[in-house]
Image (cartoon, rainbow, N blue to C red):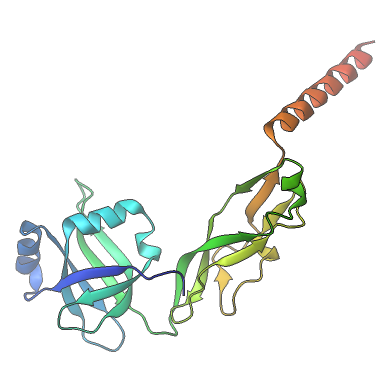
Length: 212
């Protein structure tokens, strides 16, 4: 599994409709609904401060949560919509969908690097740059990989690792169709500057020869 699935604690909302939703907001809550999974929809309230903090952290809609509501079994959910105030841009309602083990969802999976000690490019002074420390994959809710692994042991300076070079876990695929870069080995700043100087000198020499 992809690390530890974070808990999301909520309260069951006893009333429904606009009146109950307005009361929830006055009480410092954000009303919401949990639907799907062949079970009746469950109206909930989430503390505003907790929800706002999670929204600011980013990727809220692509994070799998373990929802905990008193009196109900824990259930895995993913956010499907966040309604916001048109003026203040603050959350006013949130929708969650229950997930079956076979449900396909998009999640960001961390990238693990191996082969750093043997990497030719690093041993020659190169610098590893992680262009994408996480990659967004289509995964099955019941079989989420903890990470994807890239081996950089044979990379030299200037080499890159793209998604097509990665052995992805069974049942997963990238959300982006093109062969994007995950990491590369860049030349150290001193060598890069030297190469730029040599290139400029070569261009100046060609210009002088042309002028003559």
